[in-house]
Image (cartoon, rainbow, N blue to C red; front, side):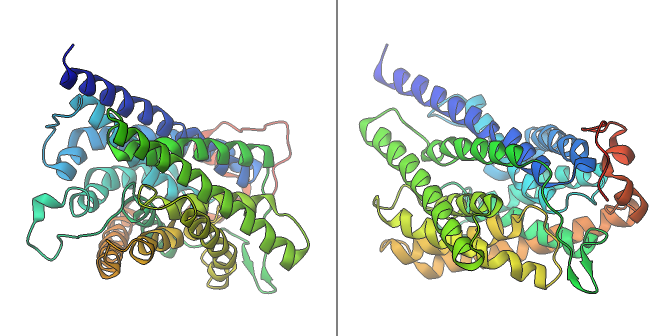
Length: 391
């Protein structure tokens, strides 16, 4: 076997293995969201996650991939492996939206938007960032470094979620005259399971984005990328725990988990570029941002049951800018330009798409349907039929 063939085979296997790890994030999002919503909405949340994976992946296969990258050509690995790795990312962008509008969103219109996101909006974002050779020389030729998508994936999904919340509104009874009604999570063990599945998936998410493992240099880059990814998650969890204890004298497991996820989002833009200490600071700031951002979004009555805006939007921005702050070779202004250009495009295109779809098929379930539960009204199957449904 010649060396070129060996590298081709190893990198193909690496892409497929990374893709499998990323797909673990599908049940990760599903379990996290199912645990954070009330029991009467769990089947609906799970169904939405399955539908997103199915329709978004197929839309990316048929339309989105070529729009994003221009062609299927790839001389470094199997073209099928390269596609599958990129396909694994697509549903995550829509998953960010699904959790943030849960307990009042209907499955059919959200599935339609998942198709639009996977076929058009997300590929367009990829095209002007990772596929920038296609628009070279234009204003949209972003010289932004974003290894695995702090902005390309997480902020894009976060901006789309913000657009969706503005159109769909809050859950019935969330904001009352006396303030904010606390709606507790229904299943903390599921939340923890989902978070750790996401954490594991992140190793494929970021490590696989290095693109190759078939040389000593690349193998070291992959290992360092995964180590730095894990470090940022650890720091995010710790700082969230500390801040919650200082403020409330309690360890809120849901906030600790979101702190870890915030750290993971923040490191995603440049885990291959940092030394082993910088991710501690980046992840810690990411975890702190989650703790501070959650009540701010509630103050503006932006109802986000899973904290996705704080985790993905805020830390997607922070993580991308952090590369320009901590890496001398990367221009901060280029990072800022990338964040702003994608913010405007992702928010406006998502808002327009959701607004148009909403004119024909309402995203928001009726108040009566929300009281009865989305499981009964959207699925006809309750996740916990023996339990009394909470209102």
